[in-house]
Length: 265
Ligand SMILES: Nc1ncnc2c1ncn2[C@@H]1O[C@H](COP(=O)(O)OP(=O)(O)OP(=O)(O)O)[C@@H](O)[C@H]1O
Image (cartoon, rainbow, N blue to C red; front, side):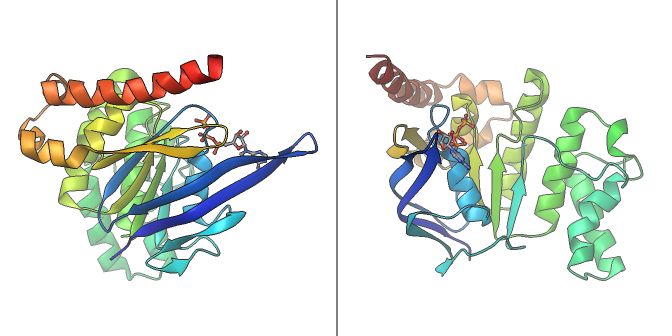
């Protein structure tokens, strides 16, 4: 069981000698094995929220808990996948994926079995001995995701993990992440600028507003996905073509557009 809770979270920062509220009144629960995506304008505090769960940043008021325990530092129960691939360049694909397990003291035979399983799941067979520089950006990110899943963390934190990928690779990765998320459900907090990506991947989409960053609306995509049978459709473009998907995407775009207009006014 791994659930994340933000309770009345506020975060102040100082800039140019002035203190400002970057986040205010954030209340959110990401339930066990739920996939929650956060979208919102640049600077609304998405990364700050994620860093608080990772234990790299702390609230000025309120609290952030995982399974009821207040977060005081980073821990192996929470894995982070960043936009930059962050692999060890001197280690092979297999060693990168197995690195965290080795640190945890998992015996070699057991480690090899887990690594092999994720190599197969992420379509990396044949590349076990390759080094990161021999892989495309998409494959490097597959290794990073495999490494996080292999650690079997309760919570996975992903900050724009596909942001550096080209459009086609991004689509393939989105399909693979959906497949992996259904096969190996985890509690996921996923940050993205791409509305379609959020709607395609998440059970719920949190739309944020800025100045200060607040939760504007939470959209239950999972209920629509189940009712409309999106998971029966193999390809992302088939899902994106359904009226239910278009409706949700437009609803979220409108919310984001309203904020843009409010800032401009
Ligand atoms: N360490 C810091 N010191 C001062 N200000 C900070 C610090 N970290 C973040 N901020 C400010 O807090 C606000 C929220 O930043 P954050 O990176 O969380 O936003 P974001 O929604 O992730 O942005 P983006 O979508 O552009 O990545 C911004 O105004 C940012 O400049």
